[in-house]
Length: 164
Image (cartoon, rainbow, N blue to C red; front, side):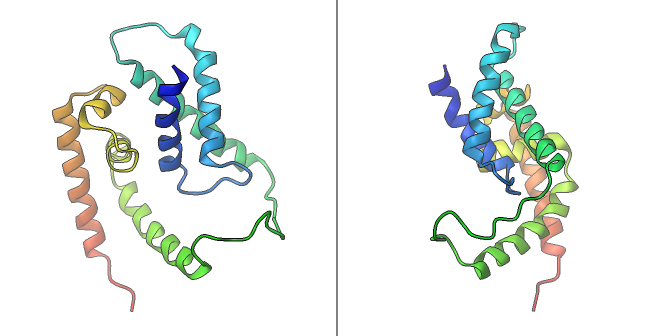
C-alpha cells in the first residue's frame, strides 16, 4: 500500500510546501504522511468515498501540522551550509520568489476547493478522475472548477503591472 501511496504523498507535499520549512523537506513531510496514514488506517471506515480521498485528507493535515510546528519553533540560522549550492543562483531564486509572491494574492482570491483542485491537477499531476475522487466531486465539476480558477488567475495576473 505504501509503495502506491508514497509517490502521491511526495508530489502533494512538494506542491503544498512552496514556502520551505526549516529543517524539513517535502520528502520528510511525505514520510510523515505515510506514518500518519499507517496510524490512521485502523480507524478508516469505507463510507463509499475513494481511498485516495482518505490519503489526501491525511496528507493535507500532516502538511498543515508541519507548518504549525515550524511556526512554534524558534528560527534557526544556518550560517554554513552542509554542502555546496549546485542549484540556481541567488538572482534566479530572488526572481522566482518575486513571481511566487505575485501569485499568492491571486491564489488567495480562489476558494479553498478551487486552490486544491489546481494544486492536484496542475502541480501534482492527477487526472480529473483522480482529483474528483480525492476531493469528493465529479470529473466534470473538477474540469469546470479548474477552468474557472485558471481564468480567474489569468485575469488577476494579467491586470498586474509589469516590473520595469
